[in-house]
Image 1 (cartoon, helix red, strand yellow):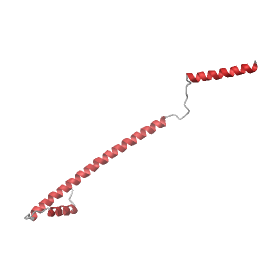
Image 2 (cartoon, helix red, strand yellow):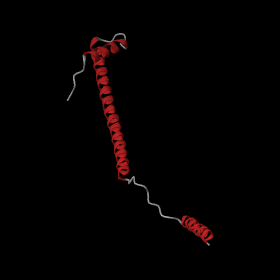
Image 3 (cartoon, helix red, strand yellow):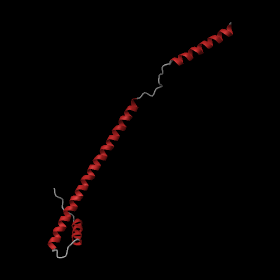
Image 4 (cartoon, helix red, strand yellow):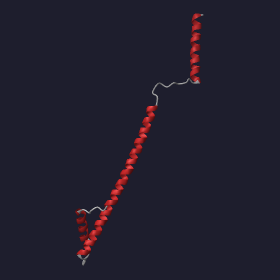
Length: 113
């Protein structure tokens, strides 16, 4: 699918060709040079559009990856149980409880005996 070259590009190309025109160069040669410049401009624009599409695809892929990663962490957070954690007593905690019980027993024995 060949896109028609706009009149603006044609005018730009012709002005560039006339600006670089050599002495003794015919109008036909200048027109051929202008056509070459038109093709160059069209090719440049086509490449820039392709690069822009690639950048857009890459940006969308990165955005999609970030969203998936965020969704995965959200799902992990939702799976957590927010109730109070049930802890197991460590040996130090058992020793402290035993000393507390012994001290109350000792206090009770002292008071009642």
